[in-house]
Image (tube, rainbow, N blue to C red; front, side):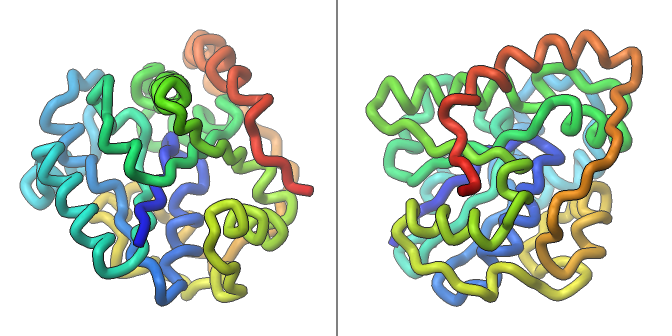
Length: 240
């Protein structure tokens, strides 16, 4: 069995991807297992909703988290949805044993959505810089991760998921395209703060063009984030 590790930033439809894999009988899904570790060890510039509850309810030792994930993979495939910036280790060699893929989204859309919950995020809070660092780390070890752009996925979710499953060497299942409204049992306890939109869905919807605005005070953050986003462009899996 394998660990399929989704390295994402916030507000990147990573939860919807987790829900898709949760519909399969051959996968366990884990929702941000390094979140407690991150909150316990990072120098935080913002207050995370339910901080204390998350720390008190989760394993917060990095290597113990890894051990538990690998142990679970002895029973079934594991789909691990996590945030790039939760991986504080600069040399996370344990990732070399997993199948890694990075999920990105245009920073304008990411920041516009994120700011609705946390008004003053920094570059460290949105994960794009850390994702780029992890890409470089994995590539230097001969294990470059696949790169998924959420906008590409949403052009045609079924076609993209079929392509992704083929690249992951697992069979596509049509059940991945839909789920019950209201969330899944594996949701983290932070779901009440972050998952309201996905809880209203029952599957992937075709992409719709909507105007996205970034609050003026976050313009400098957008400028900081763009070079990291652009560094991924030649690696994105296309929806074709």
